[in-house]
View 1 (cartoon, helix red, strand yellow):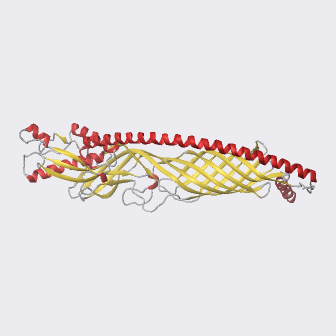
View 2: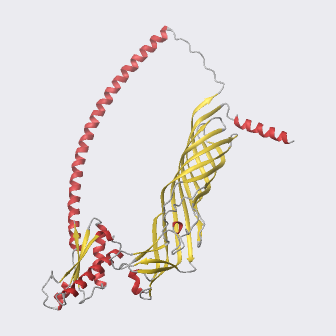
Length: 486
């Protein structure tokens, strides 16, 4: 009985292999879409990982050795999505850090209500063995190599930060310490690129083949892709929450890296996640186009030599067609020459109009840039005596300059701090520098790159705008000023 079953299975395979013995296409080009569960799969030491949905666009080619067997390859562009949720971390994580003055302290952070999304777009090259069961069903198995084209993360959460300075035996954590990065930050956002490497995937597919016409079949099926290797680059993983400061620049901040590609804050250098692997399961539809058919059993008849009268008739017809073709080409060339002349004239007029438009735009751009320079270099005055803290009006003045600096990213500036004539040079030197440093810190906090701020200078009372004859004039002279450096 067992031998009979084996014989029946062999006969069925032979029948399926010869189902198209009369005619089949050796080459097949296809294009299709797929979608379903498509995620970056990983396990976390804390928090929850949630799978996401995505899809793929595929362009493929299959070469059929027989009506049943083929090998396929092509290009897939696949989208993967996943999510990480964290309600809270049970304990505070700490690490040694340095402030802007170079002092060592212990930086701690408590994380809660944190959510992060990760997505990746991969270019995949499949190598698949394809088998056709009869006229309707098919299955394919093989592998894929995935190259990351884009991989990003975006997150948001609450971070309660502390700074303990052993030399002072004091912990900083209050709204007054916020510009040092020590306070409770609600809704802190983070985003950046994931550093992923190439993936190797096991690929399976099965479904039905529907014949739309003689040369165009439609493949409908299920596909399953499973990543075999860890696509996360483990070298030099950053800490999940990282304190940042710049030596000599007042203040501090912190950065939040991706939970999928970072390590614990503190001495524990283990990654938060285990290996990251792409995984997908969904539905795929492919339109295929066959060509280069082969028909078995066809016989070629020997050609019959033509008679002389047939040769003469064919020659006359060839001469007539050649004359007609020559006349047609002459007419086409004349029409093409007229068209080229008209096109060249239109192109010349368009070029002149475009040059005039560009000149007007350039003049308008230069006027706008000159006005922006004037507004940026307008002083921010009104400081109280020996004071450097920015009040609301001064912050609004700086906000206007920040908007223009963002509009013109090529501008780089020096910041000068000025005082009135009251006080010693030593005091005025310190106050002028403090005003410049406060202005710089505010610009950086509002998104201006610190690389665009070249130098801070205390001018003291050496460059008054008006005579220091009364308090009103002295308030005008007590100022900070941005100077654009070309």
